Length: 64
Image (tube, rainbow, N blue to C red; front, side, top):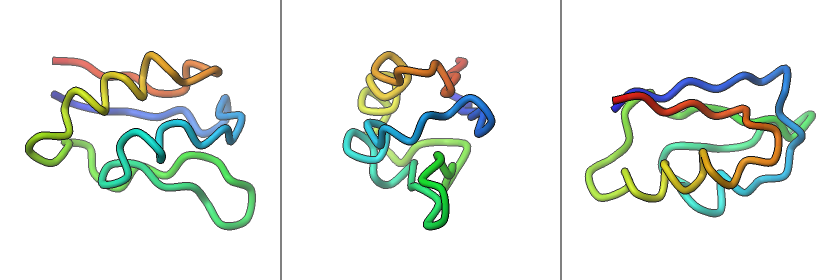
């Protein structure tokens, strides 16, 4: 599984951080998504996929 984010389309809703806090964070200045790792921790794969589906701006892409 590989994860990419598009910070330019992020609307700073924070759903990704709530769902997968070991994979995503938010920038302290503008609240946009910060990718902590491009491969999720063991056991967080489902949460990362849910974060992709829950992102209102479709700023998260999961492949593999």
